Amino acid sequence: MKKVAFYTLGCKLNFSETSTISRQFEEKGFLKVDFQENPDIFIINTCSVTENADKKCKKIVKEAKKISPNSYVTIIGCYAQLKPKEISEIDGVDAVLGAAEKFRLIELLDDFAKAQETKVLASEIQEATIYNNAYSINDRTRTFLKVQDGCNYGCAFCTIPLARGKSRSNTIESVVKSAEEIAASGVKEIVLTGVNIGDFGIVEGKRNERFADLVFALDEVEGINRFRISSIEPNLLTNEIISFAAKSKRFVPHFHVPLQSGSNTILRKMGRRYLRELYEDRVSKIKTLMPHACIGVDIIVGFPGETDELFLETYNFINELDISYLHVFTYSERANTRAIEMGGVVPKKKRNERSKMLRILSDKKRRKFYEENLGKTFSVLFEEDVEDGKIHGFTENYIRVAAKYDPILVNEVRRVTLDQINDKGNVEVIEPEFVYEKH
Ligand code: SF4
Image 1 (spheres, rainbow, N blue to C red):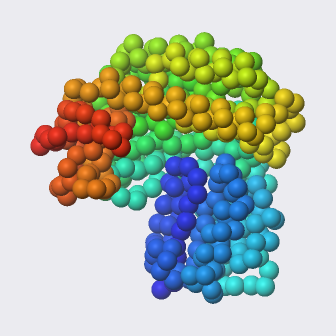
Image 2: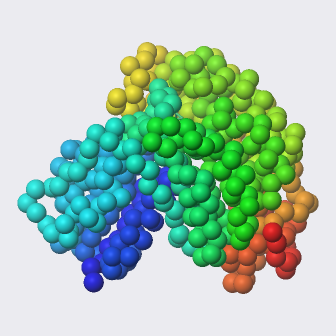
């Protein structure tokens, strides 16, 4: 029995895909092992957004070869699609597979027999037109379920459409089936993932279905306590979806909505499909219907042309917005993007200063959001996340909660009253109630 190990870099989508590919291996009789357990085959799923993707990839390959010198090393993922040749030249790599090939790797790699030459099977990204279903099952608590792949938007800074291709989706029927399978395995929370999931519904180039209808259908799936939407573009987060979430049985009051800049000048340069007024309107709609909702925001600092003045516009805009936390990204130049050709390059030092300012703002926002919710009662799904005698989990509105560790709490949903914020910045509960949350 050949042993195979996996390593994943990047986003939830990559995790869901690695997990699905690992199940393909298990179905074919391979033994899935940890990276350290002397595997015969390594599959490394890469990301192109990660800083220094090339260095990281090289480092992991080196480590793999140290653990298992005769192993077969395969590289897949976004970075493999963007730079197959560069990766094939890394010492120790046996095969590189692109976006159109990665789900067929067992069939394509011919028993994983080592050859003199590195195998490169990466077609042009236009060939990646087939949708491959994927979901992760790592522990029993939470699953990432892919519903959509690729993107047709073409933002000036983004390489994802080059690495993942055009927007394409699963069907509602098939997503519901996957959700039912996941429910049957005992998982309580599903996080819907994709590249641009609000654009859900395109099958073979034609728009057949709508994301809102997917949400309505999933809300009926028995056995799942919670659905979380991983991230959705503000222009696609419609009033219909927000209003439905406000009265939904299972969709939680947590939205992650990329803003990228609070300056309309920069939003236009980025080629985003909304202005800050629309964003403000989305936040206010969510907060009017769900005052306790958590809103996360992606921001890029240091995009070309972002003067001190325009950055301040972003800072002040976010400062005024009723949001709960930020994910701050520092702009970095990527080959084959429109942004790399733009003038007004922001010095690296300035990019880092701006990033630091927004990270401090994010901490303040999160703290304020947590404080506003103290004394209120929510349900927490406890995870196998134990540190210093405390078990952790998240409320439906994404507050990280700590309680005294009790093994019985793992993968349990409990009602809790949020008591205090501890020195680690988590909300502490004294006594989780012993009641199941039933749907
Ligand atoms: S919406 Fe823009 S940033 Fe998001 S994946 Fe598509 S092109 Fe990239």
